[in-house]
Image 1: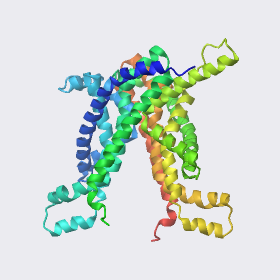
Image 2 (image 1 turned 60 degrees about the horizontal axis):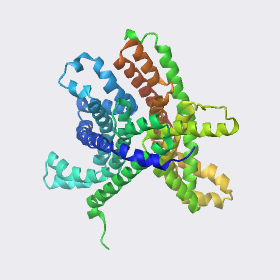
Image 3 (image 1 turned 45 degrees about the horizontal axis):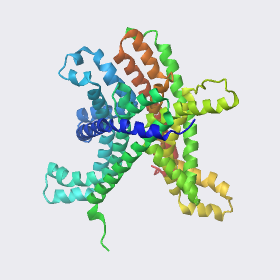
Image 4 (image 1 turned 180 degrees about the horizontal axis):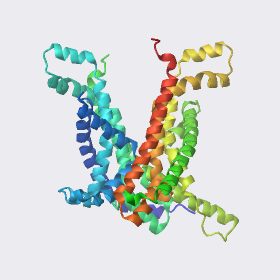
Length: 231
Length: 231
């Protein structure tokens, strides 16, 4: 048993070839997930039962089951259903990349919608009352008052969710996608050097996590710039 | 649905494995979390650094990578150790149950470290001072004052950690643990009905998470009984 440095130098560039796919999964499902999360959150807080109940059920199911099971249901399970094979969405579900994006989007949307709801509920009532007193309509209050404040409140928790989304993209390797973890598993199967390969890949992920955290901290500081008191 | 007949007992035993992993990893997770929190709160710089590294490493690495590393890595290490004593041994097999349980409790333990640390810091200094003034020893203060006050504070986040443990159990099927997802794979190979089989897995995990959520809610209700205003 030894730690083979040349093996790492050989394998690292190969694994980094998959970083593009990791980023594609992260950005695409992160963006789509955010859009879906806003939709689900609006349904959840709408106060209309036939909008809020489906949203609650969606959140409950998606947060109560493992993401790996969700990925398998989308990738292996959906092709069993005839109406999916015949629908216009079939090109998406036929492709492992499309399936991974769909599963990651659905999963992250459930978590993010609850984070956003926490942000919306955290907006100070006084601000909304002031808006009402100024004659702003309900939708104006939501767009000009609730949205900016809720964004700032939800951002720290949202950042954690982006990081767990990054970690979830590693699961795309289970449905044949060759992102970084997929490539690493192939190399380990060939060389049988799990320590060298997996540890160096873990460091790559940690660097990515660190960079995301730094970026989000900067955005947080920007959004909270007016809350800092000048001495 | 008729495809499911004959697989119910396999699913049952798969669920038993899920529960076994959950219980074993729950104990380990609490231990790792408490050690980590103790190290973070201690005045020893080295202990602080080590536990800081522990949380950064396990929160920044994808779960699947940790599981794969621990499974294949421990097999190699144990083989090397065994060969020192008996050169005849070709390969030491590590049970996926323990490699996986250990991996997920290390991961979730890193989150629990922060939860426990925060909860111990949330214990009111006045209570501790009062206990010392009454002549309690530091061990007594820990068990009669700190723990009863902190578990109530830690409970909401701790409930989420338990849900993470259950959901991470599905990942251990990747290294060959015969839990429900693994059962589903075998069932699909025979019946060719992936959607049905994976939906059953989803429902099993959903019911386990539901039971945990309800238990945590009941415990929170119990833990906050002195906070309620008498009607």
